Length: 73
Image (cartoon, rainbow, N blue to C red):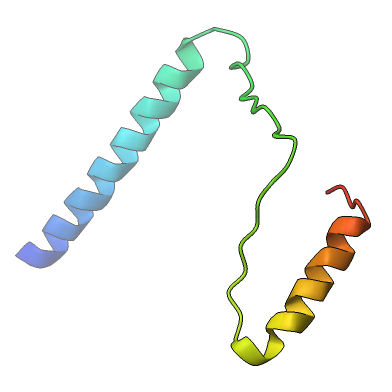
């Protein structure tokens, strides 16, 4: 084998060893399931829209219609 191929194989083997060791250590850490991440949901979200001047009145009326519909996502 030439030197370049040997270095390539060495890097692949090192990566596999690192992954194997991390999986083995994770399996040994007997704890239960990790705590779930919870995020508090805000009451309202502000969305800013940039538009060209000719369509600005249409965008304002569409936003007003959407806000008047009281849509929840």
